[in-house]
Length: 131
Image 1 (cartoon, rainbow, N blue to C red):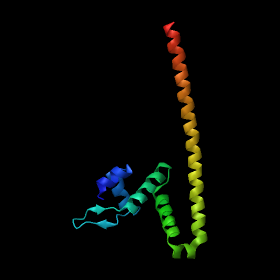
Image 2 (image 1 turned 90 degrees about the vertical axis):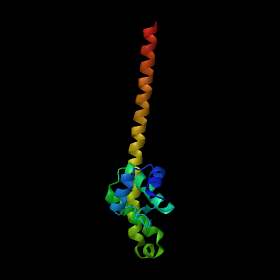
Image 3 (image 1 turned 120 degrees about the vertical axis):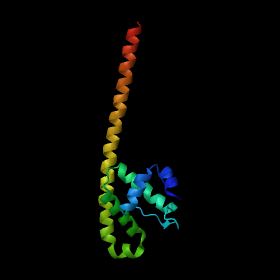
Image 4 (image 1 turned 180 degrees about the vertical axis):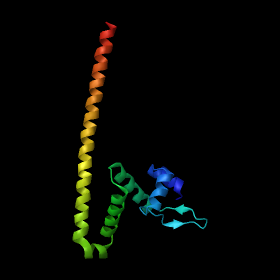
């Protein structure tokens, strides 16, 4: 896939996809003869992970590190040699994700409560003005 297709599929801007490439976060698997970035489904999956990490407040450095950890998990040789370290890093990132998810759930509850309050307030005031 070319970068425009990838951007549309991942809901990232072309600029962000290029930035992630330049930062070494998600490097396209292939370049065309003309030098165009070409992405595989696996590259798109990595970009989706990066997008999700970014929305949870991960820094570029943390995103790169977590992707490296996930690569180590997938590489049986690395995982066997450094399993305890990989497992510890996964736990750290899992805790960060859990904390962020709890914060977002709390914000969602606040938003829903405020929206309900506004609806009730508007309904009462609008009905009072019609009487």
